[in-house]
Length: 231
Image 1 (spheres, rainbow, N blue to C red):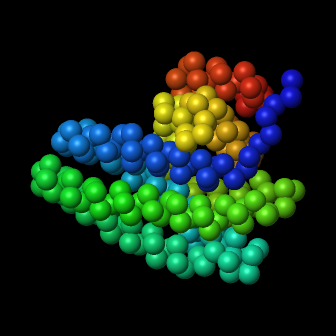
Image 2 (cartoon, rainbow, N blue to C red):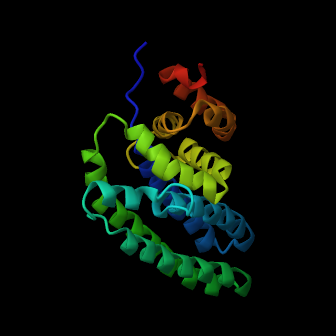
């Protein structure tokens, strides 16, 4: 059978869909309901995942330089990596404010949450507006190697990459993405992840991805891309 073409950049871009799911479909309802205990649990999972994703954007010393620096290198500074690192610092400050607000009660949490969500969603849009047109101009040949070198290596060096994979697959398998069903969104992300992994890395991350998806979703993914579990 002919499998769908791999969209390598989805290893980064589709994680924005994960973060949007967290913000709109998980955290926002919990904040609105005033369910502090469940919000805190979901918030910790979100913060841990976005920390790894941000490292894949900004780079990690001694490992990959991140997607922003990669695109600056290829497109004469068109991204301005320093600007996005500064936006991450602003976001981290608002993240910390949410964390501090949780034990202070529902009112404090909602105030901090509203400010953080607005910042985070605007930041995602800014990244997409600037970076996605440039990503589309990268040569198709060698794109997986670029993302592995610049992004995946940074995420692994950051620590918590297992969580990034599990959290991302669980979210996409539950909620899908803006343009895709749960099975479709999961397939696009997992197929991209395999493309940017070494065989040894994929041996590690495949069972994590499989366990994070509902069995019916994983079966639908494999029906389209049986090579995910092939040699």
